[in-house]
Amino acid sequence: MDGRQLITDLSFDELQTWLTELGEPPFRAMQIFSWVYHSMISDWPEMTNLSANLRQRLSSLAVLSSLGPLDRVTSADGLTTKELLELRDGETLESVLMRYEGRQTTCLSSQVGCALRCPFCATGQSGFRRNLTSGEIVDQVLHFARQLRGEGLGVTNVVLMGMGEPLANYDATWKAIRTLNDARGFRLGARRFTISTVGIVPGIRRMTGEGLEVGLAVSLHAPNDSLRDRLVPANKNYPLTELIPACRDYANATHRRLTFEYALIQGVNDGPQQARELGNLLHGMLCHVNLIPVNPTAGCDYRPASREAVASFREELNGHGIANTIRLGRGVDIQAGCGQLRSRRQPPVS
Ligand code: SAH
Image 1 (cartoon, rainbow, N blue to C red):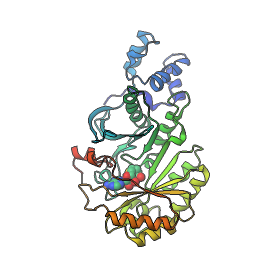
Image 2: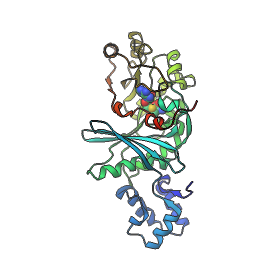
Image 3: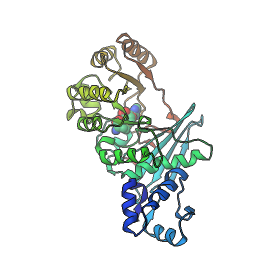
Image 4: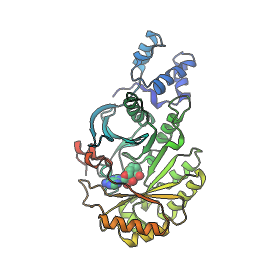
């Protein structure tokens, strides 16, 4: 494995310290930060305001990216691109670029694999390998930002909804957000980020104290503990009586509307009774429910809810005054669901 320092693993202050220890003046940090996050170069020789000697020395000590492209698929409409990327130790991760009118959203992985084993999720089925470092998270954004720049576009939104559980890799995830938010570098506003979580309550509580208005999406998928224990096993540790108050507090502290994700699974969680329970659970909360007919995966026989079931589920939620939208299988044709491209190459471990 390449033991060189990954530059994007360093905050601005850490970069400054690192350079000082090499005997370089403090202003070098600003030069390099600017090359990495404004010019988005991926190789040392391109840093033309540094001497050839220094560039040579830096390239022997550090790398500017941790990711190499392995595979890429684009949906038929051209709007969703999913990439399989290889890390320096040979592990792989997936990142997705979604294009909308006037905005480009990257969906990032926070871990290689995932330990939480939600039965319907392809990443969960493949098990946990390791946490990503903050630089490996940052690099996913830079990877797409370089591609978009050629079209005169940039990354406008970042969602941590790819492989892994971001709040189970809290420090690296938040460091990546702070690095990308840094006004001296990439300058992506806090409100442009969304963290999606199974509902790790201590992590949500910690986020509440960060002082950044990052969006929070919670993968709810069930309105009561007995069903949620099955669909989201982490619920056994953080039941709804703890999760929902943590969500309310986060919404109140950040003044941001929370998103609840709810994968509709035929005959499991898509009935009128569950819709009513969900309506009662979320009553009076500043929130929005994202309904997603479950995306079938190889390791699980759950089927998506029927069109009729989805319609009556929505009607029930509307009756409770709960804002909701239906997210219709974006990128389903390219298996853009969580973990699916990676598991096509690498069969699940038992
Ligand atoms: N671990 C985090 C983020 C990664 S998953 C979390 O659970 O929120 C991103 C979202 O995709 C989650 O809401 C997850 O439940 C959902 N998801 C995973 N597999 C899915 C599938 N097969 N069909 C529909 N949604 C799925």
